Image (cartoon, rainbow, N blue to C red; front, side, top):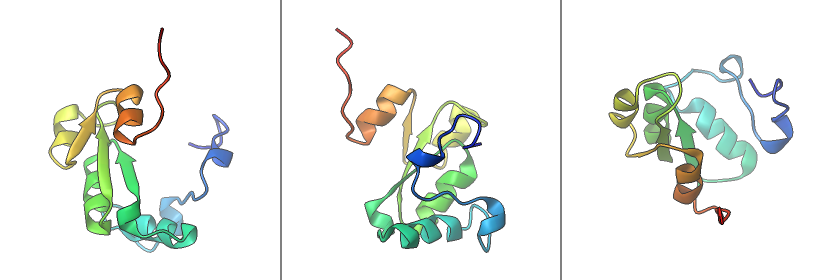
Length: 103
């Protein structure tokens, strides 16, 4: 997933299901990334498009942000994430990232 658009360099920690003791909704992978980055879960946000993503974020003690586009319906995402965004712009705002002025 990361190799095709050449995104590997943009992410300091990347783990696949075969690299963690248990897959989502178990929080092992999220916690493993926190440990690798020297961060506490409460300092992190986990962004996902699946119910198991929201469940893993909650189990890890992370802020969970669901995106309404992706592999599951917005309703399924909203059922498990405390926060759902509908666009990349909304995601950037939710994360407190600078948003370019369109004018």
